Length: 171
Image (cartoon, rainbow, N blue to C red):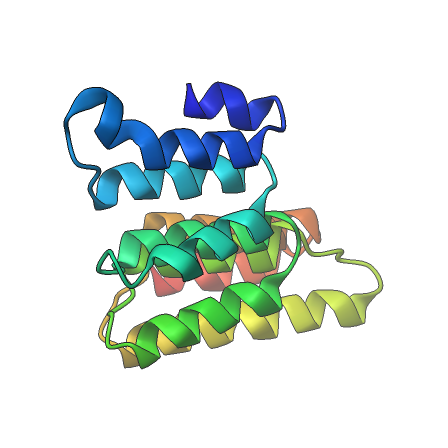
């Protein structure tokens, strides 16, 4: 029901339905249910609405890495990498440790949406991606196959086989 309402653009009704679940089913919603609501809003492009809901309800629920990752994904999906980074910093500031999935979502946002021409944009994209790799390692999180795949895809799109080979050697 919630997904259908959101896909129809009826976000307020979906949020109201989510709030009323307990009355209809006699089961209390948990953080997984809340993540589903946030994720569905973000996937359909209603990231600002998801952020509003998160900010209103995060005191009632204990925010976790999954919730923040969903919101970072949403902001990156609409091309607002700056907001994704802001949520990552907010997450860290609250003492919630990001995981490899969180960093991969941010890395994907940086790399997949990037325009690679002129050359300066490619360089900036790679610099930002390397910054994410460095931060991951500083926090003791080793980049996984997905992390490398995201960056290799950018090298491939930019027709930089020598950089692809260098990155493969680091794996």
